[in-house]
Image (cartoon, rainbow, N blue to C red; front, side):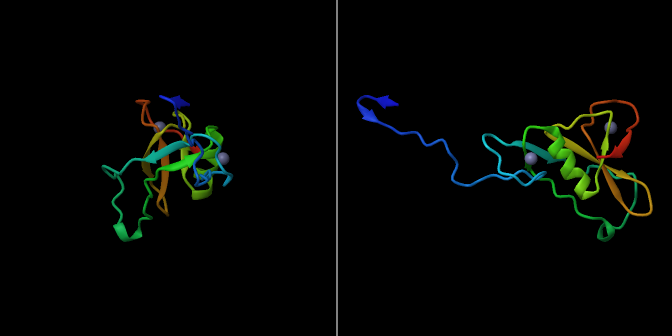
Length: 117
Ligand SMILES: [Zn+2]
Ligand SMILES: [Zn+2]
């Protein structure tokens, strides 16, 4: 651009490549970000030492929700099929022998329907 006779070259390219947490490839352009909310209340009383810590993110992906699902599957998260992959996901503890987490966008009002991501 040219501003009052002074030439300004706008640098738009990030010098740090952002990689997708799903497929590990470099993301060209703006990454799509996903945050996992803090757990507010747990219905399953488990000693915190036994509980795998949830990294709240943000995680960065290509804009295709399939890449976020790949990431969930790799981490062993379940995905609530009544919701969608959104920027903010709520972790829901799933009772069982081992503590598992389901991720839901928390928008629907009825029971979750968790499936492997
Ligand atoms: Zn990707
Ligand atoms: Zn749900």
